[in-house]
Image (tube, rainbow, N blue to C red; front, side, top):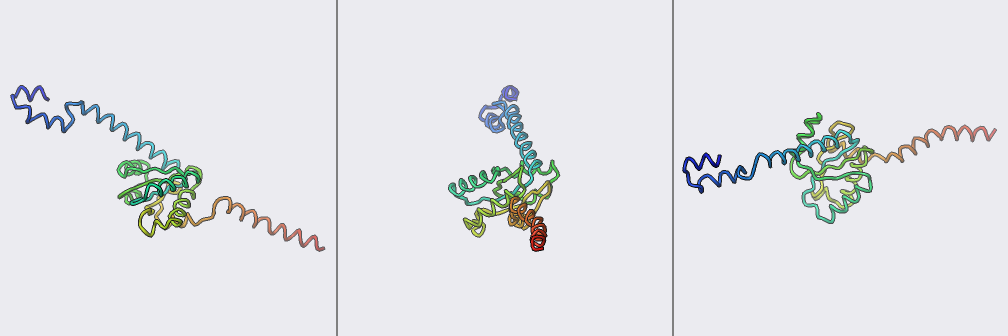
Amino acid sequence: LGALLQKLRLPAYSWKPFLVEFDLLRGGARMNAKVNAKKEAIVAELKERLQTAKGAVFTSYKGLTVAQDTELRRTLREAGVSYHVVKNTMTRIAAKEIGLDELCDHLEGTTALAVSAEDAVAPAKAICEFMKKNKLEDAGILTLKAGVLDGRVIDVAEVKALADLPSREVLLAKLLGSMQSPIAGTVNVLQGV
């Protein structure tokens, strides 16, 4: 294209800025292919995370300080949850490709994703506890957007309800206790006889 423009005898100052702006002088097509490959890899990774996640929570983190963010990440890591800032456009593409179209309505502004492949409750519980402890939701600093639970999108109220559930260990202990109490009652009656 540059050679053609030179043959037309147009002054370089009129056409070179155009070529530089559209990256034609530096092999723009090759650069765009590299960028697209990176973006496709990011979308593929997001798709995999959302598909394998038992539980995921999307948050907005506007105004979160570095110290608060570091503490949040440490808390989530201890709970076995991975936490990443995500780009809305790429997350939209990934969500549409795996059938989570309802998620696209919640992807505005700053967005971070907390995911756990093992525990469906862990992301919601860890984030909600952190928000309560640091009073971040009232200030609008760290807010919930939506969640994904076993392949379906849940709203903020459902995420909060999920966070209020007791842990798996507590639920198992209650189940075992309720199974054990009739047996213990029978043993006590038989001992009295």
